[in-house]
Length: 547
Image 1 (spheres, rainbow, N blue to C red):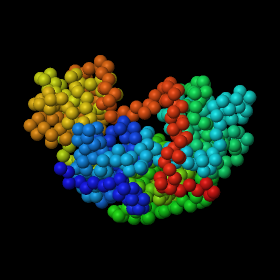
Image 2: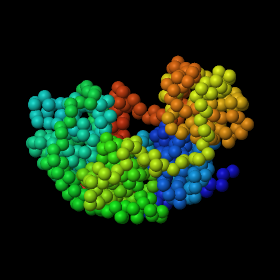
Image 3: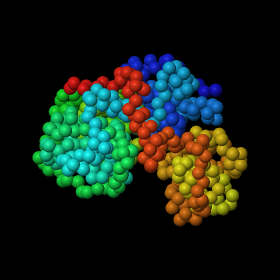
Image 4: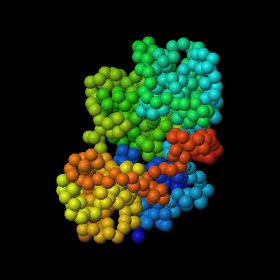
């Protein structure tokens, strides 16, 4: 019997509304989370819990409420499993939602599909509040056919743009739009259409330009690339034409426009001393994000600051900040990306400030930490998630053990497992270890393969505790590493049954790969989000359309 305290849905609703810090964490795998979850729940799957929780919930006294699988959906309550692991890491204020997501729904609260739903709902509420103009694919095509002066700016990441985009579009991630606009669109008469893959980033990008007061007519491409394809039009692939070089005059104008937005929307500015005090305050959570481009972040950044381009931070905030009621500080030596991002985060309902320290531009060239992975904290800032994680077995030894009859499991993603795996390996997930077949559980030696990272070591940790008489050994590396070490690999397609693929979100998953019905359903779902979430205040939104 678990001694982790439980919380009723009614008590959770009160906690979410009381204004104090709280992290509502859904520890189900993404496929289950994405099929339906409470609006304000962030997804941190049990399969990688200890490796991700520290960055998302840095203070051990933070109130945490876990949502997990409950029997009979799962063999054991994953919320309880996760609570035990968090307690081992020192988290002292952890509760489990009694009855999980079904109980939340039974209490009259909606469960919403998809991921990053608060940000998507926010964009739809922005469109309603600001009356953001939209241009249909047919209208855009007609403008082009008539030779009108029109440009399409794609506000997604460069990687997404390269996969597919409206022909002739120019890649300019959302947070860069105001900063780069004067160089990308030199004529005030040019019509500007902002595109994404659906609705939300197009809306946010277009409205940012409107809020910044650019003189051009600006609209969002209705439905983005999905709407474009539904109109029977083809998308393009590749990086596109080289971007227009930034000019000093253009950047200066972009910075002035962005600073004006920040002033009108009341974005606070803090100095380095204040930031230091906030980061040392154990009574509050403070997230610090570098909202420049991944390339700039990789070239050099302030130590301990997480790199997330501003447009992606607005679109995927729940991926980075799990503690509601926390403070957010944005860093950008040019200021514009931070200013535009901050004015959206304020309206999303967060306490946000921009670091405005004299000499910050010099600091970005002299005092920054070089390297480090974009989109994540510096290695030096990561705490060891579980000091007692099992050590990996040398690859040559793993190959010998397999040849001698050792059993093998893989906790890689189900799609990766289907493509390649150690010969004889069985697929599983850390939250489903109790369902492993008897021969695996009884094998004297069990090798645990997995993806890059620590997921296989976390699974091995659980397996050692479950089967103390079994020798459980995690195996590091990639399939190429395994092959080079002499491990026998099986590349015969071996799809995991759909009912078992709890790590994969099947909900409208093929909307970008030719399923027109899925695209229509997804775009309709996005448009209905304001009604689905109820009053914007329930989500914490504070829209300032009159600013």
